[in-house]
Length: 444
Image (cartoon, rainbow, N blue to C red; front, side, top):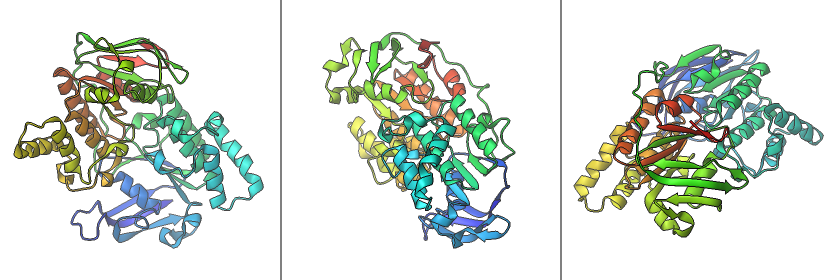
Protein backbone atom coordinates (compact mmCIF):
# COMPACT_ATOMS: atom_id res chain seq x y z
CA UNK A 1 0.00 0.00 0.00
CA UNK A 2 1.13 3.56 -0.67
CA UNK A 3 -0.59 6.57 0.87
CA UNK A 4 -0.46 10.36 0.98
CA UNK A 5 -1.29 12.01 4.31
CA UNK A 6 -2.35 15.70 4.48
CA UNK A 7 -0.34 16.70 1.40
CA UNK A 8 -0.04 20.41 0.58
CA UNK A 9 2.16 21.14 -2.42
CA UNK A 10 3.03 24.11 -4.62
CA UNK A 11 5.68 24.68 -7.26
CA UNK A 12 7.24 27.85 -5.85
CA UNK A 13 7.99 28.78 -2.25
CA UNK A 14 6.41 32.23 -2.52
CA UNK A 15 3.51 31.16 -4.75
CA UNK A 16 -0.03 31.75 -3.47
CA UNK A 17 -1.38 28.92 -5.64
CA UNK A 18 -1.29 25.40 -4.21
CA UNK A 19 -1.59 22.43 -6.54
CA UNK A 20 -2.76 20.07 -3.77
CA UNK A 21 -4.02 21.18 -0.34
CA UNK A 22 -4.47 18.93 2.73
CA UNK A 23 -4.85 16.04 0.31
CA UNK A 24 -5.24 12.43 1.47
CA UNK A 25 -5.02 9.47 -0.88
CA UNK A 26 -4.43 5.72 -0.61
CA UNK A 27 -3.54 3.14 -3.26
CA UNK A 28 -4.64 -0.28 -1.88
CA UNK A 29 -2.14 -3.13 -1.91
CA UNK A 30 -2.15 -5.46 -4.96
CA UNK A 31 -5.06 -3.64 -6.58
CA UNK A 32 -5.37 -1.50 -9.71
CA UNK A 33 -6.63 1.97 -8.86
CA UNK A 34 -7.57 4.43 -11.62
CA UNK A 35 -7.13 8.13 -10.85
CA UNK A 36 -9.29 10.39 -13.01
CA UNK A 37 -9.77 14.15 -13.11
CA UNK A 38 -9.58 17.18 -15.37
CA UNK A 39 -6.37 18.09 -17.16
CA UNK A 40 -4.30 20.32 -14.88
CA UNK A 41 -6.06 19.18 -11.69
CA UNK A 42 -2.83 17.84 -10.17
CA UNK A 43 -2.88 14.15 -11.11
CA UNK A 44 0.66 14.05 -12.48
CA UNK A 45 1.89 16.19 -9.59
CA UNK A 46 0.41 13.68 -7.13
CA UNK A 47 2.07 10.83 -9.03
CA UNK A 48 5.47 12.56 -8.78
CA UNK A 49 4.99 13.06 -5.04
CA UNK A 50 3.96 9.43 -4.48
CA UNK A 51 7.02 8.27 -6.44
CA UNK A 52 9.31 10.45 -4.34
CA UNK A 53 10.34 12.65 -7.29
CA UNK A 54 8.73 15.71 -5.71
CA UNK A 55 9.81 17.62 -3.68
CA UNK A 56 13.29 16.08 -4.09
CA UNK A 57 13.53 17.33 -7.68
CA UNK A 58 11.10 20.25 -7.71
CA UNK A 59 8.34 22.09 -5.92
CA UNK A 60 7.65 22.64 -2.23
CA UNK A 61 5.88 20.18 0.05
CA UNK A 62 4.64 22.50 2.78
CA UNK A 63 2.93 19.72 4.74
CA UNK A 64 2.25 15.99 4.67
CA UNK A 65 4.05 12.66 4.29
CA UNK A 66 4.10 9.69 1.90
CA UNK A 67 4.11 6.21 3.42
CA UNK A 68 4.64 2.73 2.03
CA UNK A 69 3.17 -0.19 3.94
CA UNK A 70 5.29 -3.30 3.30
CA UNK A 71 4.64 -5.24 6.51
CA UNK A 72 6.02 -2.12 8.20
CA UNK A 73 5.25 1.57 7.66
CA UNK A 74 8.04 3.30 5.71
CA UNK A 75 8.29 7.05 5.15
CA UNK A 76 9.35 7.46 1.52
CA UNK A 77 11.62 10.44 2.30
CA UNK A 78 13.88 8.11 4.31
CA UNK A 79 14.71 6.10 1.17
CA UNK A 80 17.40 7.00 -1.35
CA UNK A 81 16.55 6.46 -5.07
CA UNK A 82 18.08 2.95 -5.30
CA UNK A 83 16.12 1.86 -2.20
CA UNK A 84 12.92 3.60 -3.30
CA UNK A 85 12.75 1.88 -6.68
CA UNK A 86 12.28 -1.49 -4.92
CA UNK A 87 8.95 -0.19 -3.67
CA UNK A 88 7.67 2.27 -6.26
CA UNK A 89 8.47 3.04 -9.90
CA UNK A 90 6.85 5.40 -12.35
CA UNK A 91 6.19 5.38 -16.05
CA UNK A 92 6.06 8.96 -17.31
CA UNK A 93 3.44 10.51 -19.55
CA UNK A 94 6.22 11.47 -21.96
CA UNK A 95 8.68 8.56 -22.40
CA UNK A 96 11.39 10.85 -23.79
CA UNK A 97 11.79 12.24 -20.26
CA UNK A 98 12.57 8.76 -18.96
CA UNK A 99 15.33 7.47 -21.22
CA UNK A 100 19.03 8.00 -20.56
CA UNK A 101 20.51 5.77 -23.28
CA UNK A 102 20.14 5.49 -27.05
CA UNK A 103 18.25 2.19 -27.32
CA UNK A 104 16.24 -0.24 -25.21
CA UNK A 105 19.02 -2.77 -24.67
CA UNK A 106 21.37 -0.12 -23.28
CA UNK A 107 18.53 1.42 -21.24
CA UNK A 108 17.70 -1.91 -19.59
CA UNK A 109 21.35 -2.56 -18.77
CA UNK A 110 21.60 0.97 -17.34
CA UNK A 111 18.52 0.46 -15.13
CA UNK A 112 19.63 -2.94 -13.86
CA UNK A 113 23.19 -1.82 -13.17
CA UNK A 114 21.85 1.12 -11.15
CA UNK A 115 20.10 -1.25 -8.75
CA UNK A 116 23.25 -3.40 -8.54
CA UNK A 117 21.86 -6.42 -10.41
CA UNK A 118 24.51 -9.16 -10.75
CA UNK A 119 26.08 -8.86 -14.19
CA UNK A 120 25.41 -12.47 -15.15
CA UNK A 121 21.64 -12.02 -14.59
CA UNK A 122 21.18 -8.90 -16.73
CA UNK A 123 20.96 -10.61 -20.18
CA UNK A 124 18.33 -13.08 -18.87
CA UNK A 125 16.21 -10.34 -17.26
CA UNK A 126 16.46 -8.25 -20.42
CA UNK A 127 15.29 -11.15 -22.57
CA UNK A 128 12.38 -11.93 -20.22
CA UNK A 129 10.94 -8.41 -20.06
CA UNK A 130 11.10 -7.70 -23.81
CA UNK A 131 9.40 -11.04 -24.50
CA UNK A 132 6.73 -10.28 -21.87
CA UNK A 133 5.83 -7.03 -23.66
CA UNK A 134 6.45 -8.51 -27.13
CA UNK A 135 9.03 -6.01 -28.36
CA UNK A 136 12.22 -8.04 -28.74
CA UNK A 137 12.50 -6.57 -32.26
CA UNK A 138 12.94 -3.09 -30.73
CA UNK A 139 15.86 -4.07 -28.48
CA UNK A 140 18.64 -2.53 -30.58
CA UNK A 141 16.63 0.12 -32.43
CA UNK A 142 17.34 3.79 -31.69
CA UNK A 143 14.69 5.54 -29.61
CA UNK A 144 14.83 8.37 -32.15
CA UNK A 145 13.47 6.07 -34.85
CA UNK A 146 10.52 4.80 -32.76
CA UNK A 147 6.94 5.96 -32.66
CA UNK A 148 5.51 7.35 -29.43
CA UNK A 149 3.71 4.09 -28.77
CA UNK A 150 6.85 2.01 -29.23
CA UNK A 151 8.70 4.27 -26.79
CA UNK A 152 5.95 3.78 -24.19
CA UNK A 153 6.28 0.02 -24.49
CA UNK A 154 10.05 0.34 -24.00
CA UNK A 155 9.47 2.48 -20.90
CA UNK A 156 7.18 -0.20 -19.45
CA UNK A 157 9.86 -2.83 -20.10
CA UNK A 158 12.29 -0.83 -17.97
CA UNK A 159 9.74 -0.57 -15.16
CA UNK A 160 9.14 -4.33 -15.22
CA UNK A 161 12.89 -4.99 -15.11
CA UNK A 162 13.15 -3.04 -11.84
CA UNK A 163 10.56 -5.37 -10.21
CA UNK A 164 9.05 -2.62 -8.07
CA UNK A 165 6.11 -3.55 -5.83
CA UNK A 166 4.09 -0.42 -6.71
CA UNK A 167 3.70 0.82 -10.27
CA UNK A 168 2.52 4.34 -11.13
CA UNK A 169 1.37 4.90 -14.72
CA UNK A 170 0.92 8.52 -15.86
CA UNK A 171 -1.20 8.36 -19.04
CA UNK A 172 1.01 5.44 -20.02
CA UNK A 173 -1.13 4.29 -22.96
CA UNK A 174 -2.01 7.62 -24.53
CA UNK A 175 0.23 6.93 -27.56
CA UNK A 176 -0.50 3.22 -27.90
CA UNK A 177 -3.31 1.69 -29.95
CA UNK A 178 -6.24 0.14 -28.10
CA UNK A 179 -5.35 -3.49 -28.80
CA UNK A 180 -1.74 -3.12 -27.61
CA UNK A 181 -2.87 -1.13 -24.56
CA UNK A 182 -5.26 -3.85 -23.45
CA UNK A 183 -2.59 -6.52 -23.98
CA UNK A 184 -0.21 -4.62 -21.69
CA UNK A 185 -2.93 -3.94 -19.10
CA UNK A 186 -3.66 -7.67 -19.07
CA UNK A 187 0.03 -8.35 -18.38
CA UNK A 188 0.05 -5.80 -15.55
CA UNK A 189 -3.04 -7.40 -14.01
CA UNK A 190 -1.30 -10.79 -13.90
CA UNK A 191 1.75 -9.31 -12.15
CA UNK A 192 -0.35 -8.70 -9.02
CA UNK A 193 1.27 -5.35 -8.28
CA UNK A 194 -0.06 -2.31 -6.47
CA UNK A 195 -0.97 -0.08 -9.43
CA UNK A 196 -2.02 3.55 -9.69
CA UNK A 197 -3.02 4.42 -13.26
CA UNK A 198 -3.74 8.01 -14.24
CA UNK A 199 -5.89 7.83 -17.33
CA UNK A 200 -8.63 9.76 -19.12
CA UNK A 201 -9.59 6.72 -21.20
CA UNK A 202 -11.39 4.64 -18.59
CA UNK A 203 -12.77 2.22 -21.17
CA UNK A 204 -9.27 0.75 -21.62
CA UNK A 205 -9.40 -0.53 -18.05
CA UNK A 206 -12.85 -2.13 -18.17
CA UNK A 207 -12.63 -5.52 -16.49
CA UNK A 208 -9.17 -4.87 -15.03
CA UNK A 209 -9.41 -2.14 -12.39
CA UNK A 210 -10.47 -2.50 -8.77
CA UNK A 211 -11.14 1.17 -7.91
CA UNK A 212 -11.78 4.45 -9.70
CA UNK A 213 -11.12 7.67 -7.81
CA UNK A 214 -11.35 11.29 -9.00
CA UNK A 215 -8.95 13.97 -7.85
CA UNK A 216 -11.49 16.73 -8.48
CA UNK A 217 -14.90 15.09 -8.39
CA UNK A 218 -15.31 15.02 -12.19
CA UNK A 219 -17.14 12.15 -13.85
CA UNK A 220 -16.47 10.14 -17.00
CA UNK A 221 -18.58 11.08 -20.02
CA UNK A 222 -18.91 9.89 -23.60
CA UNK A 223 -19.37 11.66 -26.92
CA UNK A 224 -22.84 10.40 -27.86
CA UNK A 225 -24.53 13.80 -27.37
CA UNK A 226 -22.18 15.71 -29.68
CA UNK A 227 -23.26 16.75 -33.20
CA UNK A 228 -21.93 14.98 -36.28
CA UNK A 229 -20.00 16.84 -38.96
CA UNK A 230 -21.04 17.65 -42.51
CA UNK A 231 -19.03 16.73 -45.60
CA UNK A 232 -16.91 19.28 -47.50
CA UNK A 233 -15.74 20.03 -51.06
CA UNK A 234 -12.66 20.50 -53.29
CA UNK A 235 -9.38 18.60 -52.81
CA UNK A 236 -6.43 20.64 -51.52
CA UNK A 237 -3.91 17.83 -50.92
CA UNK A 238 -3.46 14.56 -52.85
CA UNK A 239 -1.23 11.61 -51.93
CA UNK A 240 -0.38 8.94 -54.53
CA UNK A 241 1.93 5.88 -54.39
CA UNK A 242 3.62 7.27 -51.27
CA UNK A 243 6.44 5.21 -49.75
CA UNK A 244 8.59 6.37 -46.81
CA UNK A 245 11.17 4.27 -44.92
CA UNK A 246 9.61 1.02 -46.23
CA UNK A 247 6.15 2.17 -45.17
CA UNK A 248 3.67 2.13 -48.06
CA UNK A 249 0.67 4.44 -47.70
CA UNK A 250 -2.73 4.25 -49.40
CA UNK A 251 -3.67 6.91 -51.92
CA UNK A 252 -5.46 9.74 -50.13
CA UNK A 253 -6.92 13.15 -50.73
CA UNK A 254 -7.90 15.87 -48.30
CA UNK A 255 -10.57 18.44 -49.05
CA UNK A 256 -10.41 22.12 -48.16
CA UNK A 257 -12.12 22.70 -44.81
CA UNK A 258 -12.20 18.98 -43.94
CA UNK A 259 -11.17 17.23 -40.73
CA UNK A 260 -9.53 13.83 -41.28
CA UNK A 261 -8.57 11.38 -38.54
CA UNK A 262 -5.54 9.11 -39.09
CA UNK A 263 -5.70 5.92 -37.02
CA UNK A 264 -3.74 2.68 -36.81
CA UNK A 265 -1.58 0.63 -34.49
CA UNK A 266 1.50 2.11 -32.82
CA UNK A 267 4.38 2.20 -35.28
CA UNK A 268 2.22 2.00 -38.40
CA UNK A 269 3.58 5.33 -39.70
CA UNK A 270 1.26 8.13 -38.54
CA UNK A 271 4.01 10.43 -37.23
CA UNK A 272 6.26 9.54 -40.18
CA UNK A 273 3.43 10.58 -42.52
CA UNK A 274 3.11 13.98 -40.85
CA UNK A 275 6.86 14.61 -40.98
CA UNK A 276 6.87 13.69 -44.66
CA UNK A 277 4.13 16.22 -45.42
CA UNK A 278 6.41 18.99 -44.09
CA UNK A 279 9.45 17.71 -46.03
CA UNK A 280 11.28 16.21 -43.04
CA UNK A 281 11.56 12.80 -44.74
CA UNK A 282 12.64 11.70 -48.20
CA UNK A 283 9.90 9.83 -50.03
CA UNK A 284 8.88 8.07 -53.22
CA UNK A 285 5.59 8.81 -54.89
CA UNK A 286 3.63 12.05 -55.04
CA UNK A 287 2.49 14.63 -52.49
CA UNK A 288 0.55 17.21 -54.45
CA UNK A 289 -0.53 20.47 -52.83
CA UNK A 290 -2.90 22.58 -54.95
CA UNK A 291 -1.56 21.05 -58.13
CA UNK A 292 2.13 21.36 -57.21
CA UNK A 293 4.45 18.56 -56.09
CA UNK A 294 6.05 19.51 -52.75
CA UNK A 295 9.39 18.01 -53.86
CA UNK A 296 9.63 21.11 -56.02
CA UNK A 297 8.62 23.43 -53.18
CA UNK A 298 11.03 25.03 -50.74
CA UNK A 299 10.64 24.08 -47.06
CA UNK A 300 9.94 27.70 -46.13
CA UNK A 301 6.99 27.75 -48.53
CA UNK A 302 5.70 24.45 -47.11
CA UNK A 303 5.81 25.79 -43.53
CA UNK A 304 4.04 28.99 -44.61
CA UNK A 305 1.09 26.85 -45.69
CA UNK A 306 1.24 23.86 -43.34
CA UNK A 307 1.57 23.91 -39.53
CA UNK A 308 2.15 20.99 -37.19
CA UNK A 309 1.63 20.21 -33.51
CA UNK A 310 4.09 17.51 -32.51
CA UNK A 311 3.34 14.47 -30.35
CA UNK A 312 5.57 16.06 -27.69
CA UNK A 313 4.57 19.75 -27.74
CA UNK A 314 7.41 20.85 -25.45
CA UNK A 315 9.75 20.30 -28.42
CA UNK A 316 8.27 23.30 -30.22
CA UNK A 317 7.91 25.99 -27.54
CA UNK A 318 9.81 29.20 -28.26
CA UNK A 319 8.92 31.65 -25.47
CA UNK A 320 9.61 31.92 -21.74
CA UNK A 321 5.96 32.16 -20.69
CA UNK A 322 2.54 31.05 -21.88
CA UNK A 323 1.38 34.54 -22.95
CA UNK A 324 4.47 35.18 -25.08
CA UNK A 325 4.17 31.74 -26.70
CA UNK A 326 0.82 32.71 -28.23
CA UNK A 327 1.87 36.32 -28.80
CA UNK A 328 4.80 35.03 -30.88
CA UNK A 329 2.35 33.46 -33.35
CA UNK A 330 0.00 36.46 -33.26
CA UNK A 331 2.91 38.81 -34.03
CA UNK A 332 4.03 36.64 -36.92
CA UNK A 333 0.67 36.09 -38.57
CA UNK A 334 -1.30 39.22 -37.67
CA UNK A 335 1.23 41.99 -38.32
CA UNK A 336 -1.40 44.59 -39.23
CA UNK A 337 -2.96 44.55 -35.75
CA UNK A 338 -1.83 47.13 -33.23
CA UNK A 339 -0.30 46.11 -29.89
CA UNK A 340 -3.59 46.36 -27.96
CA UNK A 341 -5.44 44.25 -30.52
CA UNK A 342 -2.69 41.62 -30.47
CA UNK A 343 -2.83 41.44 -26.67
CA UNK A 344 -6.61 41.12 -26.77
CA UNK A 345 -6.42 38.33 -29.36
CA UNK A 346 -3.77 36.47 -27.36
CA UNK A 347 -5.80 36.59 -24.14
CA UNK A 348 -8.96 35.53 -26.00
CA UNK A 349 -7.17 32.48 -27.38
CA UNK A 350 -5.80 31.49 -23.96
CA UNK A 351 -9.27 31.84 -22.47
CA UNK A 352 -10.71 29.30 -24.92
CA UNK A 353 -8.69 26.51 -23.26
CA UNK A 354 -8.67 27.93 -19.73
CA UNK A 355 -4.99 28.89 -19.89
CA UNK A 356 -5.31 32.63 -19.20
CA UNK A 357 -4.55 32.15 -15.49
CA UNK A 358 -1.24 30.52 -16.45
CA UNK A 359 -0.14 33.36 -18.76
CA UNK A 360 2.97 34.14 -16.68
CA UNK A 361 3.96 30.48 -16.26
CA UNK A 362 6.74 28.85 -18.26
CA UNK A 363 5.21 26.44 -20.81
CA UNK A 364 7.33 23.72 -19.20
CA UNK A 365 5.56 24.20 -15.86
CA UNK A 366 2.22 23.19 -17.40
CA UNK A 367 0.82 19.67 -17.30
CA UNK A 368 1.21 17.56 -20.44
CA UNK A 369 -2.46 18.16 -21.27
CA UNK A 370 -2.10 21.92 -20.84
CA UNK A 371 1.08 21.94 -22.96
CA UNK A 372 -0.80 20.22 -25.76
CA UNK A 373 -3.62 22.78 -25.65
CA UNK A 374 -1.05 25.59 -25.71
CA UNK A 375 0.65 24.10 -28.77
CA UNK A 376 -2.71 23.77 -30.56
CA UNK A 377 -3.51 27.43 -29.80
CA UNK A 378 -0.12 28.50 -31.10
CA UNK A 379 -0.85 26.88 -34.46
CA UNK A 380 -4.48 28.03 -34.54
CA UNK A 381 -3.25 31.64 -34.25
CA UNK A 382 -1.55 31.24 -37.64
CA UNK A 383 -3.03 31.76 -41.11
CA UNK A 384 -1.79 28.49 -42.61
CA UNK A 385 -4.04 26.42 -44.84
CA UNK A 386 -3.30 22.92 -43.50
CA UNK A 387 -2.89 21.93 -39.86
CA UNK A 388 -1.35 18.60 -38.80
CA UNK A 389 -1.94 17.45 -35.22
CA UNK A 390 -0.18 14.40 -33.81
CA UNK A 391 -2.41 13.08 -31.00
CA UNK A 392 -4.03 16.47 -30.13
CA UNK A 393 -6.38 15.00 -27.48
CA UNK A 394 -3.78 12.89 -25.69
CA UNK A 395 -3.76 13.72 -21.97
CA UNK A 396 -7.08 15.63 -22.15
CA UNK A 397 -10.24 15.19 -20.11
CA UNK A 398 -13.69 15.07 -21.74
CA UNK A 399 -14.33 18.82 -21.52
CA UNK A 400 -10.98 19.76 -23.03
CA UNK A 401 -11.31 17.19 -25.83
CA UNK A 402 -14.62 18.83 -26.73
CA UNK A 403 -13.09 22.33 -26.48
CA UNK A 404 -10.14 21.43 -28.72
CA UNK A 405 -12.26 19.73 -31.34
CA UNK A 406 -14.93 22.46 -31.28
CA UNK A 407 -12.23 25.04 -32.02
CA UNK A 408 -10.83 22.89 -34.82
CA UNK A 409 -14.32 22.50 -36.28
CA UNK A 410 -14.78 26.27 -36.21
CA UNK A 411 -11.49 26.70 -38.08
CA UNK A 412 -12.39 23.98 -40.57
CA UNK A 413 -15.66 25.73 -41.34
CA UNK A 414 -13.57 28.84 -42.09
CA UNK A 415 -11.52 26.83 -44.63
CA UNK A 416 -8.65 25.28 -42.62
CA UNK A 417 -7.85 21.70 -43.66
CA UNK A 418 -7.12 19.60 -40.56
CA UNK A 419 -5.47 16.18 -40.34
CA UNK A 420 -5.01 14.62 -36.91
CA UNK A 421 -3.82 11.28 -35.60
CA UNK A 422 -5.40 9.54 -32.63
CA UNK A 423 -5.73 6.25 -30.79
CA UNK A 424 -9.11 7.35 -29.42
CA UNK A 425 -11.66 5.68 -31.68
CA UNK A 426 -14.55 7.75 -30.31
CA UNK A 427 -12.76 11.02 -31.10
CA UNK A 428 -11.90 9.80 -34.61
CA UNK A 429 -15.47 8.78 -35.39
CA UNK A 430 -17.19 11.79 -33.84
CA UNK A 431 -14.94 14.66 -34.87
CA UNK A 432 -13.88 13.90 -38.44
CA UNK A 433 -15.38 13.89 -41.89
CA UNK A 434 -13.50 10.67 -42.65
CA UNK A 435 -11.18 8.20 -40.95
CA UNK A 436 -8.10 6.77 -42.67
CA UNK A 437 -6.84 3.52 -41.15
CA UNK A 438 -3.17 3.06 -42.02
CA UNK A 439 -3.05 -0.49 -40.68
CA UNK A 440 -5.91 -1.71 -42.81
CA UNK A 441 -4.86 0.51 -45.73
CA UNK A 442 -8.42 1.62 -46.29
CA UNK A 443 -10.49 4.79 -46.06
CA UNK A 444 -13.88 4.70 -44.32
